[in-house]
Length: 522
Image (cartoon, rainbow, N blue to C red; front, side, top):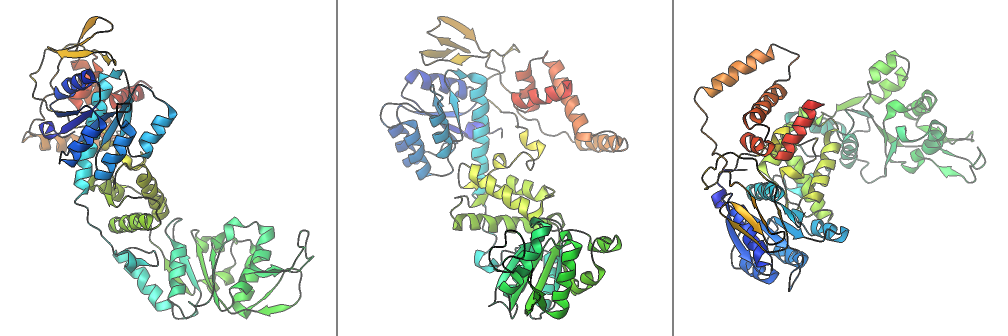
């Protein structure tokens, strides 16, 4: 978390004065500015009066309006607020409603101090990310991309040029590219710009239809031609007469069916299954595959004559990793489309989340990107996708690291950090301890200051450079893993095994530290 915590404000909303006081002391000792409200109504009034807290911690059950209602009112006032609900009653309904109405998280009473601090740090970090997302500017005009194909990269410009050259003709087109690159969109775009745009467009996934049914699907059948053929059926080629048929995954088509497709291309006629009558059809064929048809021809898995008939014009759709400069525009288009279809309310992406999306390899191409954007938009608590909303597969490991918190408190002597539970009973924070009325005992909690991040020494880049080149020559080493493990082991040794303190020194959460230690011990 950034080290300017003195600028971070937390609003605590609870009708229990002792809880407000105790939480205020615990979080205030971390350098946060604390505001309090004794009811949901008072908290809402403070927001309406101009208070802009980085985090709101709100009790669920209070006199007056409930925490859920308070959450809804505050959310309507500002969609960027980070709100954590507090409850002693962890029912399924509470959890579902809290997340449904946009809570960042909810925590159970009695509190675990370490957990409270950890959630507060993460929520405030998200608040800062949300504020950074305010600088997001719309990147595309939705109406300019009615075909759904987005991209201004050189690779996509070449695709558009070929589409322009081939669209007005009736030539057969073969669209190739990895799965998920948008080959069907290319086919639709060709059709929309062709002289057949007013006719039918029929897409057939050849890989999804069993071999014993695909001929009936494509060419139709007569009544009684096979078991189950109780009526005459018109095939896809007849359906799109004077139009365009898109044969997707044509590399998965059986050789027997390939022969009949070749006849359609050569003669412009078909035969229904069970019939001897030939039917003339006027159909343009666009085929697509993610397979290497040339290799399949060599191995006799694909007819050579059909391959040449299909490959009159060829359009290769580049993989997303080949045109990463298009990703910001694609993401913006996808968000606008989700809003248009009322599937999500998210309109923005934080800079670091967008950088993560651009940096990811995208083995599933645009289809995978669309799934990630949709999923992230659904889980986002405001109107922006933040780094935390991205799935773990996309989010870089460095995103788990939290920058150490700077506090105004003086550093206390090192001592084991005790885990304290704050009950609903009265509690007071005095001289570095929390006193609870039930049970009647005082448990010491050292107010440990975390050191400010020191400026990088001039020599440090040189050290990094030497270390990198030394380790790079040892191919069996994973550089980041090796350095990370060394730093963690040093911090654990320095603190005598105190994981909480070691995590603070390293600038990561204790959960992340524990996860890493479990990996090392495994």
